[in-house]
Length: 79
Image 1 (cartoon, one colour):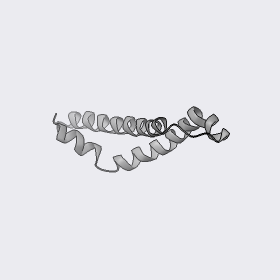
Image 2 (cartoon, helix red, strand yellow; image 1 turned 30 degrees about the vertical axis):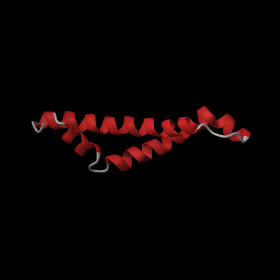
Image 3 (cartoon, helix red, strand yellow; image 1 turned 135 degrees about the horizontal axis):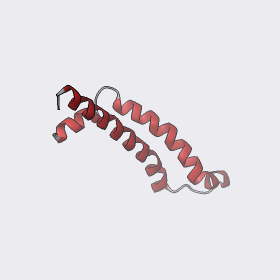
Image 4 (cartoon, helix red, strand yellow; image 1 turned 180 degrees about the horizontal axis):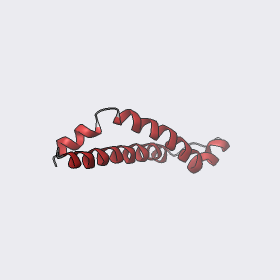
């Protein structure tokens, strides 16, 4: 399996868009859980936590989509 194939799967056929939607929904929920008290109190949010809270669901969703496509390609004899 080549890294080119991994990148192709990661950036093709709607994967980035679906991963972005997952990151927005899950990241917002997690951010409210993790930093909701600071937000409601009017304190400054931790920017590093904010970025990671959205990046992790995006990366996990993309990983899941790429893994599924690799598995499906192996079943079809493509990869």
